[in-house]
Image (cartoon, rainbow, N blue to C red; front, side):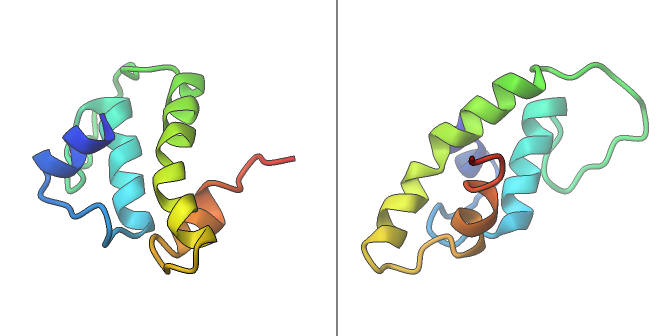
Length: 86
C-alpha cells in the first residue's frame, strides 16, 4: 500500500518528509488524498492498530539506508520509527 500511495500521488520514495507520511496515514484512515481534509465524520477504513503495524513495516525502507550513512528519510526514521519504541 505504501508504493500504491507514492505512485497515486506522484511522490518519490527517497524524497519524503513527515507531511508525506501524515498524508499516507490520512489516506489509510479515510481514503482521501494528502491534500484533502474532510469535514464529515466517517468511520476509519482500518483500525489504528492495523495502521501502526503497516507503518512499522514501511520504516525499514528508511532505517537501512540511515544505518549505512545515507541520509534518507531524515526525520522519518528519527520520529516515526522510534515512536512507541521501548
